[in-house]
Length: 109
Image (tube, rainbow, N blue to C red; front, side):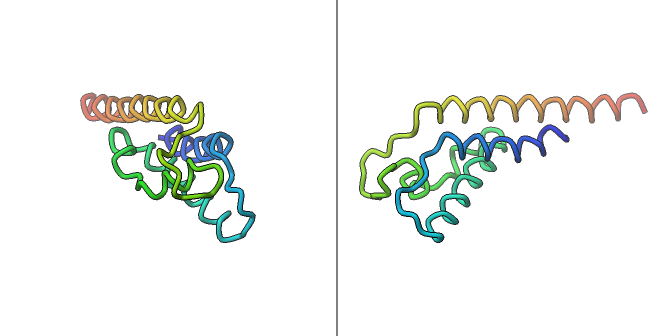
């Protein structure tokens, strides 16, 4: 359980390193960027649900490096998909171990 909570700290930092920072240097854009990165990382922490709940506008905001939201198609950075898959697999393994630990705990008693 601790590793799952720790992953909510590590993966937003990793996504922040991979995703391009918007070209517009405003505090509103910086806050929106930070919130979008946090949303992507937290959505992917829940196994099988993450890619389904990330809004298309958030993807455009994160994947258009020029800040122009009309770019089509929005192209993710090179290592983004690998990081998403790694986080999903890591979360699935952790949830499996949590379930296994609970099963073993109640099985012994």
